[in-house]
Length: 254
Ligand SMILES: [Mg+2]
Image 1 (tube, helix red, strand yellow):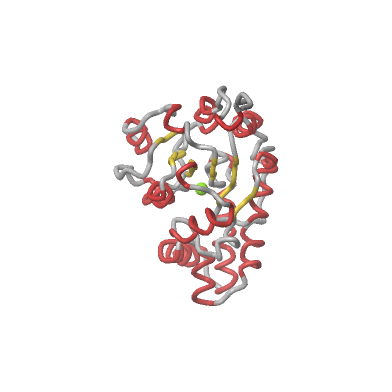
Image 2 (image 1 turned 90 degrees about the vertical axis):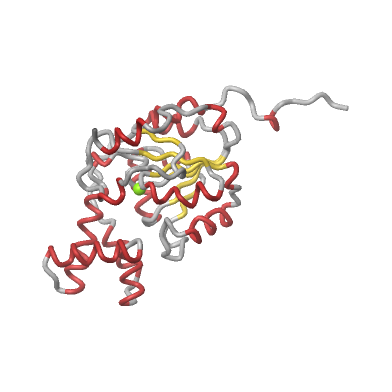
């Protein structure tokens, strides 16, 4: 049994409507959540980061790859490591890392319609840059459904899964976590959202993703993943409320 099948078998496959009945804030990660890894977007960013390190330090590919892994595990992102240890300009890094080809990323009108139909506010919370999020969501044709993007610059370069980043996000956008749901492809990024009271949904690949790290696919045994799906659009469909929210019901005038 593969890892994802194991995760899926342990958790509900379809959303229980009442589990999301109180939710009117919908928070989405970007990379590998709003699009499939098959679009080969993230591997390109990953390769650009390796190349950035190779050029910065004059390293060969294998050495810069090893350095990249070290930064990711120690600091959460390569950028954070480079800023802490070498004081590099984050704008240079982000521009370079996100200079990628989105040819394989197709518009996803079904996903757009599902997001548009969700009741309430929709926001993107990403460890990438705003420009990258706008390019990707724009190519998917879903950007217009989001009120705003909270990116790694807004986060002061402290990435998810750090608690401070979620707290800053919630404060900046006036989001009550008790009324929010978070969608993510990295399970450790759901630990804090769950602890803060959000509903959490883990997005897993439909086909094996060789670029996902083993530690990211660690078995979900802790309680911070409430739902899991390999079909975000299908998962969101039933969450569209046919019944108006209480505030929208006309009450007889006294
Ligand atoms: Mg992601």
